[in-house]
Image (cartoon, rainbow, N blue to C red; front, side, top):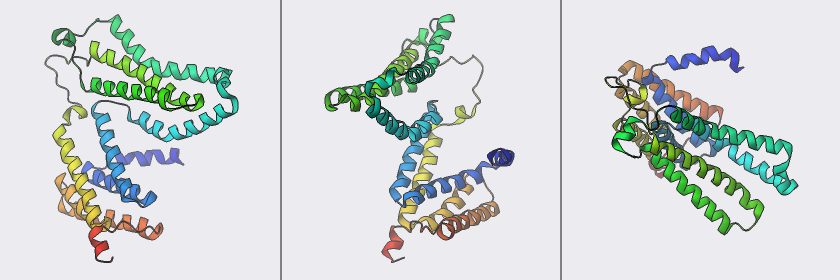
Length: 288
């Protein structure tokens, strides 16, 4: 089904941002509430949005986090089942050894490739040579990862009594510690690539500023506050209308998009799914 529809679905990318962005935000935050019908899930969605924003800013792999978040519980469940069935012999079976070797090779490939590339070139970038060792944003994240992994290792050895229960957090913590240490060393020695003199970075990320992040997060936080106070059915049209106007949309386009977005959300959730959207604190006080 996806392959025949892919050319048509790709056209969504050509929709102007002032129309697409508020509708996507509304769908994401409404869907977060609809799964368990809890307002706290909407706050969790905002927290993960901030985490994703920080990962984008510091150029961390967001799909890897998403895959780990989804597949992590499944991996942990079947890992303990395998240990319960075979014990430590699970790690010395041919298939297990092959998978472990492939995993280590894939994880270590990136850092090792960077180290080899830098050693073949200049031993130290001009930026580091001139200003000495200086941490960037990635360096602080690596330090946090080192601290977390050390805590996990110490906690596993001191608080978890059995070998089988201790094995998974020790293995994961050790891998994270090793990779974070390699990344921190790379950040200290080489850092970012120096920009060419007279050239300006015109990429999309270069145009983003912390002020823009704060403004957009403030809009989303205001939307969540409005949902908490007056509910979805009042907050959605207000948010879509004024956010589109802020992005430069015309009044007619904003009004039509607002009506379509609000009616679509109402029909989809309230009628088709028979899911009553959160009415808000004030409306619940009034008995609605």
